[in-house]
Image (cartoon, rainbow, N blue to C red; front, side, top):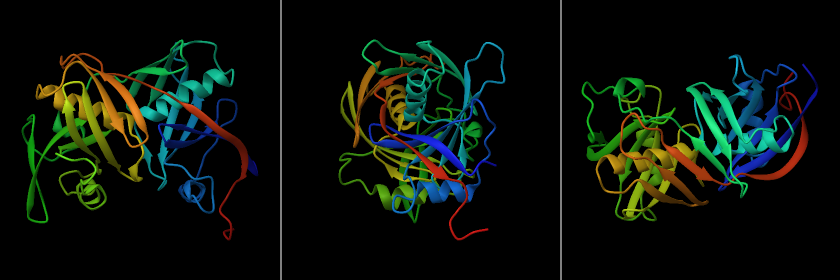
Length: 285
């Protein structure tokens, strides 16, 4: 194990990432290291860590892995995918503007646009409860969820990772921290769930806050934006192209309502700084 690692700090609408290039050397990280580096007082500070690796499938350009700030590995991250695309392109790891990438949830395709933004084919939404997993016997557009004696209506969908979406009348006053934490760890979601609080402004605009599993509320969540759009689109409350306004900024999400059609997400990805950090955790052998 090398004594230090080079990394880049990036963000997509304030959803921030530590990005490591593991295309030349195999790098294995411990959960303790990830948790320490994620600390905003003593480490680098980030919502997720992204690992860039060689693809294992012929014809695919890269593989990437995603770790939450608590050290847990997750399947997908929309803002991370955009940062991933900008990282491999700007670092000269590829000269392609159409990049095929393996993730734990399957293949995604990333497109770097002429204005420098990244458009992501997030794949088709998956509404089957067992795939989230969500311990509900029958698929529905809406589900009733009981939390501390109160009942809430949610939509549930996987965008490569699981999301519960609540419609709210005012996203600013929504109890994201308290209710988000309780739904994230609800017994009906045995692997936990990301929780979106969505306010419909009109048929082309949604305001959204997301409580992410393993990271609490973040400034932006790409898969959460896609989940909110498809849940409301399925209810015919929005059209095929919707601006999602998150605390960190806006994303464009497109889906035509066909269950087999992919969801498209477009937004920025920004470099913040680069650095080098020692391996291990201070105070531990």
